[in-house]
Length: 296
Image (cartoon, helix red, strand yellow):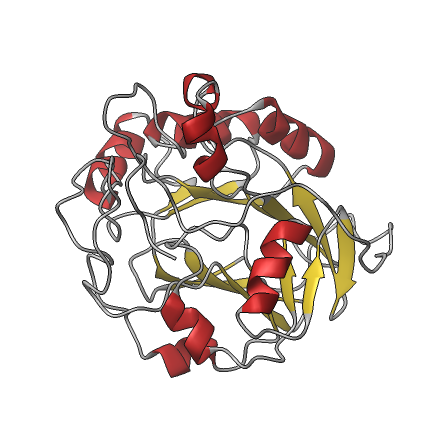
């Protein structure tokens, strides 16, 4: 599935039907963090998170540089995606992965190359039944719908909400449908820092609620400020949201990803580094290059 004629007609499955999932333990947060959480920024929104000994691959886009046309109706749509190569082979990216989480099925989060590279029996979490049905139709046999929370490999994973664009965009049915829904994820386990991966959303009340509810110590923001032609605002977060996150969660480390790799991102790492330095929050914010690993 590719981007076609509507602005940002993304490769996506539609629908909001949900299905049951495994229950997780409620008491997973320890008062102090004694163990290390590891994260690798792969490229774009693709990250690997090793949490309580379990490795999750998030939103795999594994194609070679220039494999796909630019997303029509978006900023710099003349450029081909991805804009850069993977920092390592796709085989290395998927090596050691215990489960995959697809926050939504837009091409820059779940592409043909990932579908070909990943084992068809790997445990995979999707945001709702429509996405799960699409992924099953691509040959995957162990797809689970994350309706609220689940336990996997000793880790509690909880679904969070948001909105993949502005209210103005969602008021137009021909845009609202392809923009669709996207989820975020909170990871928790005793002795580990609470880790909130916000996903493809602008700043919404759901983000405030997640921060207030889970008090995350690490927050990963998709901060490339993706733009659509002819519309104000962005469809994911940008530099002002990085500042806002640092203010809303004063004890959290902020990690900015989803930058410099697909055509419609309008904020570069270089620009964001200058912004966080200007606002005196550089010690609170990580802006990892592709391939870089972080530990918390």
